[in-house]
Length: 240
Length: 345
Image (cartoon, rainbow over all chains, first blue to last red; front, side, top):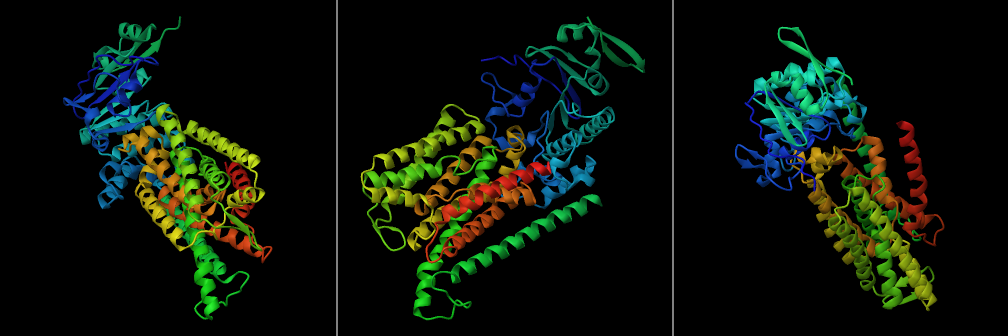
């Protein structure tokens, strides 16, 4: 048995964006999957507001957590029906009027109207990612978990997506937890940062915790920070 | 708006396919009822006592049996392909049919349950329930072993399919072994004859049993249609929308296998329908299980009806069992569908 996570405790305010950083195998995906009850921890528990997620019914967990995996399968379903699947925790036989309204609203919010009735198999990687986020938002979660949501997006789409996520988080008071390898993106958009290594939190705090020392401790690589404008910084790794 | 136009086109395609299938199905039902060694007139309600007896006593049970078996195998195939994430999954590839064949051969060759006599047109089984019972038992043993292995070893859906293929091969070998060592040639012929699926075997009591089992399974499948759609997006997504993939998978496998086992135990092996019917629908309208399940059922019924009609007319008055015809039609059709699918990519 591998101990993937140890003593991980996160405190985030509503409407804020929490970024989880860390090298490959540090436990980022495991942490998100445990939170969404996709993985059941062999030991320990995931507590939300003091309640054990593993003891909650799955449909109930789905109303708390919306989960977006690293990659989405291009199934033979339409975009609309995929987003409507996000309403599954709310219906048993079939979706009702409210479910259709929520799905339509989320599709509009994500700018997917023109793709609404395309099949997923006809979409690009970036479009698929947007649909997956729309599906998770249709669950009307209080906590949105995104596993490397920008990994398949070009730089423009990355900025657009982060803007949408920040706007939604603020407007709907959703806690948004994003795991990523993109330190610069995290530095730009995060309200809070957690850096993981070997399943343990190395450091947590505001975006300012991303500094040379913590990057070295977490990733084992030297980096330099360059101030560009009004406190905004870009982080460059130093080879060798 | 572009999206609305695409949506209308999509809905229109589903409607057109549904209408075409319904028309084909209805014409097959009608043709099956009027066609045979004793030709019935186009108006089925007019006719003498003999015509009435042929219609109610021979043709109708045959048609009902074809409808139920065809839909059961096709829908079971569609469900198995989803829950096992494998387009080649079907009651046939998972060894259910081979398990049933072994059970039937065991009953005929070892237990002597298949007391047979040769009539002018083929072999008639005199004991109607012992053979289906053992066929059902063979199919259930196959399911229990495959699902048991999956449960104990926590096997992946892909490994479950391979376990099914292995079990099917083993049951086939056991059946051949029984036939090889059998001393009575007529009984060997009977066990072989059982394997050639035939929708003419079940009568109203058996059809009632098949209908009840298939209806219960179908109701459960339809209730799970959104769950199957969620599985298409992967287990992680399914879990994240509140679906328990392992539960859906186990329930789907048990119900699909049971519905098939009951049908196959009464009719014998009818291959390829469980593979090609869902693929025809998937290629034409996509993989949405809200439409895939009912339309696969309709396609499966229509295929079995058409195959039976062909088998009854091609060298009339002799009858080619439907299982042979479906395999003949099914194998090239499947290759064509696969090539078309590849070309379309």
